[in-house]
Length: 317
Ligand SMILES: [Zn+2]
Image 1 (cartoon, rainbow, N blue to C red):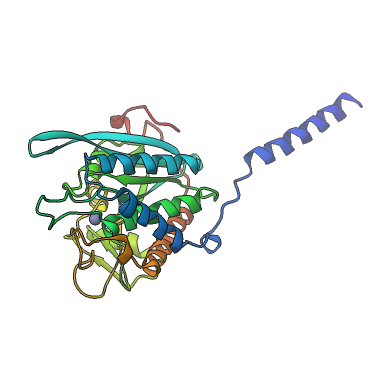
Image 2: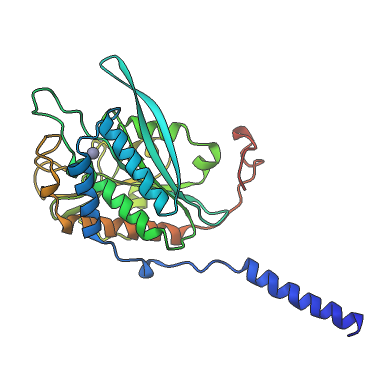
């Protein structure tokens, strides 16, 4: 072999190596999205509301739900972070905890957040108010966990964060805490938030946004919903995201009449036996569709600290 031949052979080996290393990961598209399993979601919601039961922020029930969810996410291969924060009830401080599970995407792509609140309303001594929160919101938590299970073996371009928020029932405290403690780079890279709340009853699939400009975001998810609306007074964890400039949407599945969380809203009668698998399946499929739509819409771009000198150099790409 002459030195020219050796040079040529070396260049070919290098080119092949570069091709293999730099070829984009094979990404699944929305039509390859895995089938959402309503029976799995129903089993999770039944465990949360039936076995663990009441999960009011700062109580042992919330602690049990946090520990169990963290373990489920870890078993699925997610990076899990617990985010404790303080709440005050009747002048007594308690610790509540958000559970954050991350599936890293390709460098340079944005982050999608899928959230649901894990806490319930504290039961009153007279037993008339509060309870196990099967529809509000074991249903949303279960849909989030089942979506995480489906996505754990898939590849999408975006980083996906699944977050079980605590203290939603105390003025969206957990999600406000999360949003106000995001690193600058995470705020820059936040593409959108899909929040699931009260999604286990009825026949009406709704997508609701807090800000007018988020209607386009909701419509762009490609979800075949019955209603897409601006609903300023449907309070849930998408609102802090919207308030801080991240497009957010509430996925809700409800009976055609009455309260969006059903007739047993915030009552001891909100029990898992009343959940409807068909509602969980449809809302869950909508969430998976939304994740894939956002992942397909995402474009890679470079964020350089020089673009945003005011937020510091601490960028991870
Ligand atoms: Zn709720």
